[in-house]
Image 1 (cartoon, helix red, strand yellow):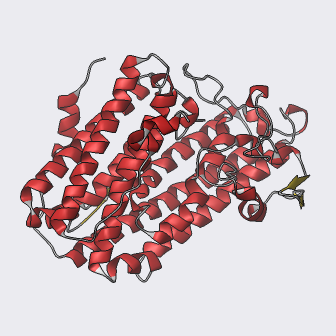
Image 2: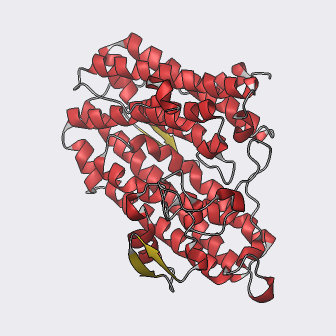
Image 3: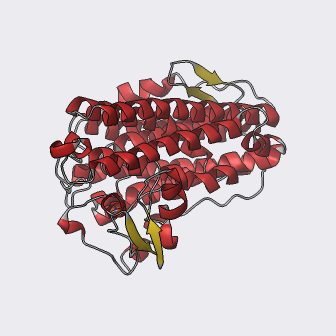
Length: 420
C-alpha cells in the first residue's frame, strides 16, 4: 500500500513553530479556552443532529435517515477532540460515560440478529430489547417502560445492574439506532437499518416503530443537554475551568495526565492494539457506522491541540494562545522538539488509516485475521502513540511537576492476560 508521508507531513508542518514561552497560568487559560470551544462545538453539532432526528421522525424516508446519519458523523468530529480532557479532570471523568460509553450490548435497546444470542452470566439484560417491551424485570425489579423518556434511559437503563455494557445513552446508543448492527464482520459494509424502522402503520418494519423513535428522540435530546452542561463547566466561572486554573501545578498535572492516558492506555491500547490482537470488529470504537478511522484521527488531534495550544472550530475560526509546548521548550528545548515531532508523526500515521478507510478499506477490514497490510496500518499508529507517550513522560520530568501515572492497557503491558 502506498504511503503519502510527504504530503501528510506537510499537512502538519505549519504547526511546528513554537510560540514564545509563557507562564503556567496563561497556558492553562488556553487549555480551558480550547475545552470550552470544543465542548461548545460538540453541543452545536449535537443540536444539528437533534434537528435531523426530529426531521426523520416527522417524515421517515431514506433521505431523512441519511441526513441524520450525516449529522451524527459531523457531531463526532469536535467531540472526539474533547477526549484529551478526560482522565485528568474528575468533572469530565465522572460525566463522560453518559455520552461516549462503549462497547455496548445493543440488545438491551432494540432487536438484534439471532446470532447475537441472549442473556449471559455477565449481563442478564444483554438482550432485554426495551423498544419491544413496555414492562420488564431488571435487577430484580419490575420496570414500567410504557413511556420511553430521558429519565428511563438515564436513571433506570444506563449501566443497569452495575454492568458497563448496558449503555443506554450517548453517541453510540444513537449510532446503533441510526445504523443498526454491522453484521459484515471484517468484510466491507456497516450497519444497514432501513428507514422503515421509523415508519408508521403497515410500512413499519421490525415492529414498535413509534417506541424506537421515542428512544432515539430521548437519547438525542439527552445528549444535547449533557453537552450543554459540560460546555458550561468550561465557561468563565465554570467548575471545570476553575479546577484547572486555581492551582497551576495541579492544572498541569491534569493536562498532562489527559494527554498521556488517552495516548497510551486508551487509544494505543484499548481502542487499537486490542482489536488487532483479537481480530475483532466488535472492538471498533464506532462499530455500527464504520467511522472508527475518524474517531482515532480526531482523538489524536485532540492531544495535538492541547500541546500546541490551538483548536480549529467547526466554523473554521481558531482558538489559540500560550501553549504547553512553549512551557516545555523553556524548560528543555530538546524535549519539546522531540514531542512536537512525535505528535506530528502520530497524526501522519492516523491520517494513513483515515485515508485508506475513506478510499474503501474500512477499519474493520484492517482487523481481519491474516491481513498484514491492515495490521501494519494500525500498529504503525499504535507504535507512534506509544512513542509520543514516552515523550510526554519526558515533558513531565522537564517541567518538574508531580509524578504522573498514565492509564495502562493489558494489550500493551501484559498481552498474555488478554487471552486468559
